[in-house]
Length: 422
Ligand SMILES: Cc1ncc(COP(=O)(O)O)c(C=O)c1O
Image (cartoon, rainbow, N blue to C red; front, side):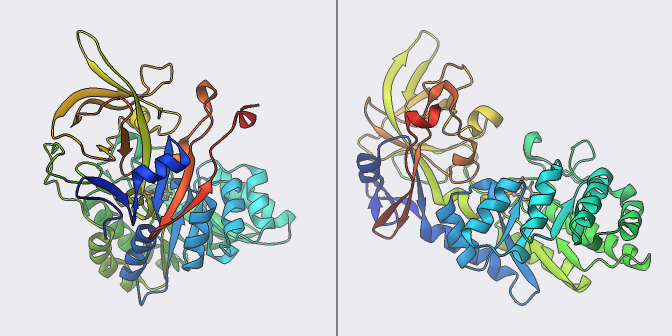
């Protein structure tokens, strides 16, 4: 099922024309398809069926409480990277035994908060963190189960800002140092060695980096076991890519050049990875974020003005980098389409927001269906790393979020107000 798609010339989210959502709730507005989120989650969980496995949703991708509650109710686990995310996960109903706490810079109070709230599994990224965790656990008369996040020096072939598994990245412990860190972990009070964690990057569209990471784990774990390090928990990370370019097609829409670029689905990737990891035994956890939520969401925005200089055409919209940072942050591509198709004409322009930064854009030199002033546009595939990266810069209240389930619509976060700015 395609959650956000055209019926004739009208864009729908499930059974609701997106035009109606904007009329009711205003713009900028995040919209999400509930059934698409569930479908994405179930398809990923299904590929690991029969294994001792858990799909831990990466809260960083989108931590709207209503969405978290849905995923907790489905039986998902939670991958968290801050005490705030531990709090949200527990508010949503994820039990502590299904929460893994990752992150390169956990503060002492965050380690303490997690332990005090029953979270025991930590993906540890440095010796200093390991030593601090041991102390914090000891003071509480408890113990922490740890996986070491190992940096396997694998190129995820993704954007440099979201590649995490290279030796030049800040993440994880260098593979060559891992044996001695495991050996240290074994001796530390308050620490139980549980497993290994590997996450090589985000928006990875090919299976090769995942296969390389799985092969690395398959070679590494037996070596560690032979040295008496009992690794029984494999956390294989997240990072499955989604389609941003040509996400939706319609005869009225321009087609980007790399239309045919294949994108490996999580199911295809996991089908290749499973036979490599399964013989190791133990539990396999994964922590996808984007592949569960990205294509279930869009950002609706209204065209405020059209303007032309001698060098450029501009479409000025009411959504800014404060509402969707990805284009400004990584020059990320989001397809932008009209809510209602009224023309087959195209226009090449920069789609820009109202914020006082030249870097405030949704798209640059983009050919799109020619918009008019007042038109409603949808910035597609915006469910992941969208709302979570919003800010109050330029004193802009945050956008609202709605969840669509068939023909029912629920406001799952009201629009920010001026009071929020104080
Ligand atoms: C350790 C870790 N796990 C999981 C994720 C989720 O990645 P994605 O949303 O690409 O699946 C990230 C994101 O960067 C991460 O750093």
